[in-house]
Length: 511
Image 1 (cartoon, one colour):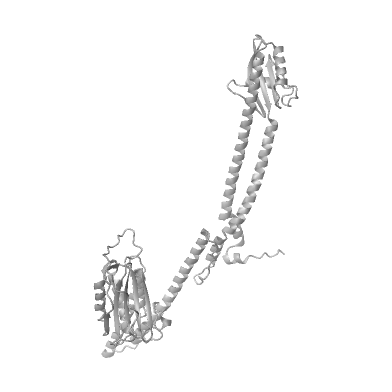
Image 2 (cartoon, one colour):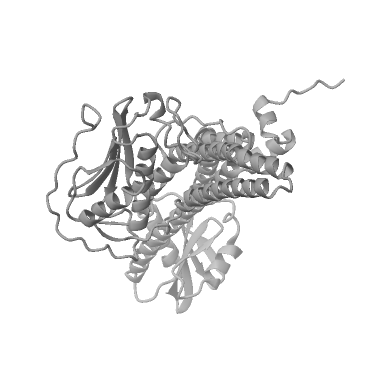
């Protein structure tokens, strides 16, 4: 029986076939990147080593040919000093004497080629290629072009100069045996290539391990993404360091936070909407099932159905408003004069219910905002205040303008909001636990207020005490940000100093 090979747990979680996973380890980004870097580094290194070797060979040839040329020039001068006519015997004797006294460099040889004969002028033993091979030396002397300074034949560098002996033309052949030098260079070249390849392999092994550690967050990112489902968005990645991968990990976690928040909000929204719509649908269905032919009862049933349908229509309209408030072009901005706007708000609010309506303060200046939506915000707060106050209680509206912001508030001396409810009253469908619900709405009023204020890049705060009253304060920037590039900021006139925002509430309710 073949032994069973256990698959790593992390590999099972990814849902990949083991063979495909291991194959992917050698065809992934790390492998391809390192292979290309290895090939590139190898090509650059080999090209550099080969270019260095060729430069070495060129320098060797130039130096050897220059030495041979100097020696041949001196030898020609000495031959010219022997007399008007140079005889073969005199030329050979001069060559022999010159090589014994002047040519001290090893592996350099001078030959005299005349009348089909080659006369060696070196007492040291010749290399195997030149030993007893006069035909080769004579061929070298005859085949060298006149315009070529030197010729390399295998490992031999030769220089040929013509010379006249007894009226006949001969040649002096200088040969340098660079076999040892070239073999040393080639051996060094091979050694350098081997060491370079070994160092590159070692470097790539270290780079493979290092790249694996650097790319580990990306593998974790992939594994985390594969483990995320539509019912489990709780997976997160640990953030280590402060490099680009850490920023990517942090961005991925933040994206998951937003997705989880949106998913949770969507689920809660669906549950709340289903709960809120179930009651009026049940009421309508029940009355329609019991509908009889009595005209009076029929009229009452129709009136009740219409009222429920009207409430459902208002509920759907509020939901649509909350959805549209998140769009960038939702607001229709314009310049709003704060003082008459505050007076207008108070005049409209007085028609909501018989209360002791007051004006706390009135700022003087201008702001940029959507007049209709801002009016809707304050009217929602005022309507909410009327539901938790009694006739004779005070409801006050005020405004104050500051250099960069404006504040508008609505305060009342009603029953107040419990501390435990103050953090959740702006949620959709939220209701105070310690107060009697006097509204027939669905609990979207304050959620709409918060959405419209956020659309203006502002904030809303609440301060409340049970039995004392509540103050809702809206803080808005005078010029909403960010301003679109194509849009010009709306002009604002100079700011007139305004009274500071009053304290929260009077110590007692107004009579």
